[in-house]
Every structure is written in structure tokens, then in C-alpha cells.
Length: 346
Image (cartoon, rainbow, N blue to C red; front, side):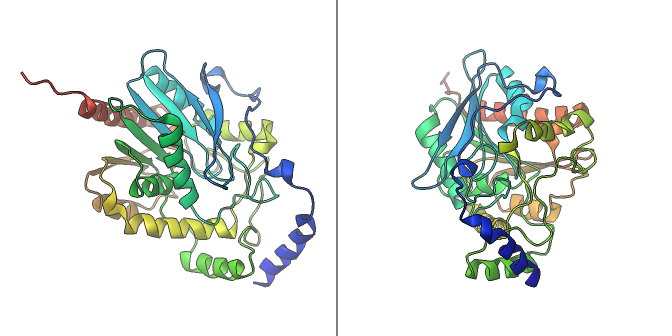
């Protein structure tokens, strides 16, 4: 607690400074010179913002396929992931005939920040994230009845996907890739610190010793997130080239919000009627298999599939693992397309 208070006292002198620019949403990003064209934005990529009530503006991106779209895929990013990290996957899904939307989280990527310190990932709750997903779908996308809507969510974005569906999102299917339902540190300790910090309205600070964004931090292969050196360097390349996208460790309040969202999602998971596919890597250090299995068992229509050689970032894995991940996704989407197809009586 003393270390936390010291951190607060160091931050407070900065709180009175003008922070409008630091909080502002950020649209067009600069393409890093170190990446190859397969990681560039899809040819017809466009940015936009969605805002729910008085909440922060959240950045989204969209790209259409070269043919008439057969399905709509909404990608929900994990913590600290900018939409740019998903460009290669968006290109692949576009090629298969799907319109792709990527919605960034509250206070992350190019979305408006909730604190004056841009690389602090902070929210008080994941519920506004779920509300933003519903608003994007119902107000912006407005899906057509003959075209399935599938949500593809990564890591803790899976909690947002579940909460959105549990609270009324009209999805035809949900894919949870490496879903994170719990913190790796002790939830009891995290909650205790978060409660104390919240009483003093200090949920926006990081835990003592938690770092901000670090240029030379271990990423990708070095961090155990993937076995692919090239894909593993993509996110850091985008963050290096675009300071406004950088994210460090999350705040105490964000950690408490994840614990709360996990409890809510699992308590209400029986409300999920849409088919669900859960994908996880056998070498994933962040996904908890027992919690994943319990959540899947509580869903009316759920299948879990393991990719033994995969790490946490399945969408950034080596070709062998990523191709298997894409095959699972494509089979799931095609099944949703078939379920939506009109049935003719013979």
C-alpha cells in the first residue's frame, strides 16, 4: 500500500496539466518501414469511431471483400492490441468473402483515453465495451438477415464478446481465440488493492512496479506469445512507428474490471444461445484450460479445440499453427452461412 501511495504522489503533480491531446482518439496510422506488404492495411480499409452516450470514442476499422460479402466478421482485440495487428487476418477473411470490422477497446489502440497518461490501459468496467459492440452492430453495421454475423474475439476481448451476447447482441456465432477469463496473478490480491484504490478514486494508477510501454521489451517469440519471429514483431513495429498506439501495463482499476467481467460472463453464460467455438494453444501461458472448459460446458452449443503447438497469439503464429487456426474459423463461419441459407421445399 505504501508503494502504491508513493506512485500516486508521483502522478498527482501531472494531473493538472492539459490532457486534451493525450486523451484524443487517433485515426490514420503510419505504416512501419520494417514490415512487409502482407501486414499492410487491406486495400479498401476505412476508419471510424463509435461512441455510446457520454463514453469515450472507440476506434474501429472496416474492409470489404472483392466479391459480394457472404458473412460479416467483427473482431474484438485483446489488451494493448491495435487494429493494425489484425490486418493480415483481415486480408485473409476479405479474400474468403467476408466483410471485416475490427473494434478496439476502451482506452486502447486509437480509441480515446480515459486518463492523461496515454499508455495506461484503464477502465472501471468492461460493460461499456460490450455496449460499444452492440452499438457498432445495431447502429453502424446493421446486419442483413441473410448474412451471418460472427464475432471473433481474442484474449480478454472474449469477455467483452460474451458480455455483449449475454446482454442482447444478435450474433449468429462467437469465436473465442485464446480467451482469458482470469488474471495470472492472484485475483484476491488484485481485488484487495483495487478496492483500496477505488475508495480513494485511484483506480487509474498502475500497480507498483508495473511498467509503461518499453521499446526494447521482450515481445513475440521472446515473450512466449508465438513461434513466428516475423509476425511476433508486427505489433511492436506499429507501436514504435505510432506513439499514440502504445500501451504499457494496465491500471489497478482495469485489472479489477477484468475480474468482475469474468465473474459476470461466467455467471450469465447460460444466456448464450449462439454457437461458440473456443480455440486455444497447447503452449498458451495466459489461457486457463480448466476455466475455459467449464465455460464451454455451460454454453448450450460450444466446442473447444486445442492447437497443441500454438502459443497465446494464434493469429500471429507460424504458418502451420495459424493455418490450422484459420481452418477452424473458416469451417465455423461456413456452418453459420449454411444455417442462414434459405431452405427450399422439394
